[in-house]
Length: 198
Length: 297
Length: 101
Image 1 (cartoon, rainbow over the protein chains, first blue to last red):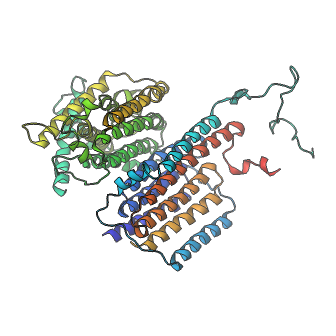
Image 2 (cartoon, rainbow over the protein chains, first blue to last red; image 1 turned 120 degrees about the vertical axis):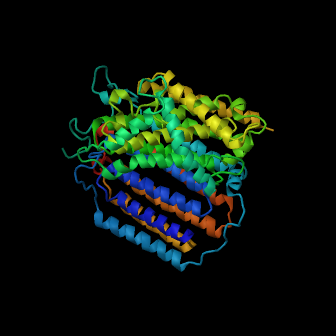
Image 3 (cartoon, rainbow over the protein chains, first blue to last red; image 1 turned 90 degrees about the horizontal axis):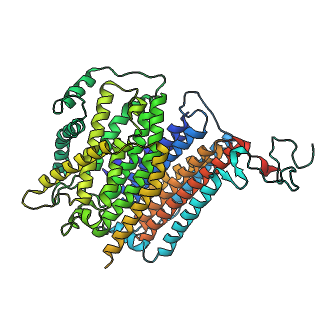
């Protein structure tokens, strides 16, 4: 039973992971990725990790939803009505992917892996909680602080208001002399590059 | 476990009917008792509409996913002592995953017909529903704290002395904001609003629309049962047997949710977003902090 | 379901993710490749935790940290996409060449 479920879920995970880069719509791609994550989450539940597995599903549903939103906002062809190929260095990438898979598989098959199953009847969720707020609290808190820093950084990077005014109205620094040309680097489409050759 | 699943499957259609009746009381949408059945039958007999270049698979499946999520969410609710359909030790997290996937399914329902009004509805809805879902998670962590467990069974057992709604009064109202959001009603109905001619369902008719409405009502049932369990003590209560108490509390929460959906106005999406992030989310933090102080030994 | 089979599935996910991250031109698709690699990493981690760590909670902790890393990657990635798009209306990796000169 577990084996059949594992086989089905892992096939689903790999197949939908592959479809991410094959479907012609970005929204479809992000939801294919979500399906892949859900399959991995359910495998984790099979592996006796009910919290991590379901938390993965929860997190990834939200994350892929946000991703789909960004897809529709920024990307060409969000609904997939026109065929689209947006790849570069294709052969090299295929080779790299295959080599990574083959190398990792070889490493798995050739190495001697230790065997120590999760003992029956262990409350893994409670153990995780005690670990998070006990011996590993510092690590866990570091993750929290990192997330906070990320939030601040993301807001700074994406904020509409720049240092010298709104970004869509130019956001130019003031000139070095009163009324002079704006200081700093020139935008590329606005004249010459500042390095030699032209 | 199998018995509990069967009970849930049998109890869901009548409860959905009751939910649809609540929706019709005083709304001038046909007779209260037979109206839902008549409308449903009329919809089932009507043909589905076609749109240009839709995503057929997702369009077909979205109402079914919605219903399935309602059922999975409902399955973590214990019906009586030791009677629960899915005996998982992380029931609250599973419920959270159902909430998150509901947002995805509503988006798919609006995106797949490839038409403007459904897409606008879906887009607005995602922006509003994600923070609403976020705050519900903090509220549910608050419900889990006194139980010291993520299992819904333990959450009920921890309310033997005193219900969570008294210990953490902010919890239930905040959780109801989520209920309004995932059942697409009232102040949070950015998906299927009348001003978008039905929003994500603007292009739907026939059996697909009937199933969507059914799933929406089923989600209301699931949410009400969950709220009754997490904050009103679930099956606990004197004299009457456990399932009867759960049913009564579920109906009470359902009526309150429908009434809240009628009573509160819907703000423009931008203002609602600010309200959610600036008022409701900090309130849920405050609620969680208060619960934390309370359960300190 | 053995440790070897779980790890091979994880290796396949990492391989596909690497292919995606290297081959896609659009920023967001590139991020999807990275996410898929992290997906494989989480699977491998849970496999090791379940089969050869005897249920030590540190294994689950590592998975949680990886999830936090994913969230960071997404947030910073999207912030950069927004910043670049504001500046040059571009969403393709090819259009960013200033670092080459």
